[in-house]
Image 1 (cartoon, rainbow, N blue to C red):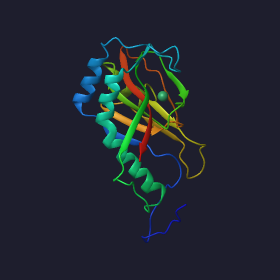
Image 2 (image 1 turned 135 degrees about the vertical axis):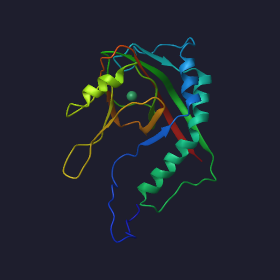
Image 3 (image 1 turned 45 degrees about the vertical axis):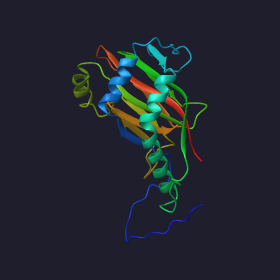
Length: 212
Ligand SMILES: [Fe+2]
């Protein structure tokens, strides 16, 4: 346990709860993944919670590609978390070799009126989502939805703990092509339906990270 020692006259701290990470994927990564959807990939949608059209598993080559593109960011995520969780006392030992075991990875092909119920990911320590495609014209739907006091169409909702005074338990994210989020596998999340005709495409992965 690290004991907090303030080093400024004033600060605000959020020392509890999980860390999430955001990374902007380069265009060529989005393109590569979108082009890979035409490969003959196995559909595992019958075994996953999503009420969506298809959940296509990555083959070995795709898992290797994504790992090579994201490992640096995932190391940074670990370093940030270690530093944050120790109130700035500890950082990652960069002399060690990082390894990323992708235990499962898949495309999620969600179409109008489909949704993904609240869930967590099993048999891993980290999960993530990356956005690859949105239905043409969804901005019009969002423009209308944002007039409401609680817009949600096609958004992903993360939930942690219970709401209370000076506490936040609800985090809503609007998907944008190229946006990638990483989070602990136990963090509840779900996706609301949208109504614009077309495909909202993302990918998810279950991962175990080691640095030894
Ligand atoms: Fe998920």
